[in-house]
Image (tube, rainbow, N blue to C red):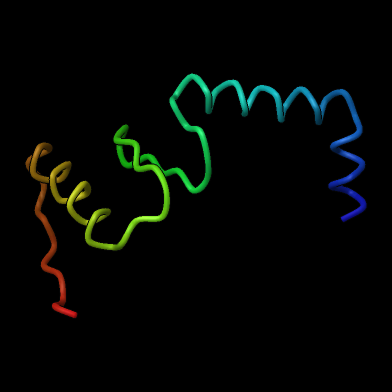
Length: 72
């Protein structure tokens, strides 16, 4: 924890945090969690099926095999 606090108090640490915040804002990320799947943004906590839908669509688009999923 002391290393974290020290990094926050340095100019370099502050600059890194500000750069991350600026990048997130530019990408439309306004909160956490936020996920990118091959450029597709998913905002907030999502169930597995939503991730699988985006991943499967990308695999299909790229003409790659879509793995079978176990039914739960």
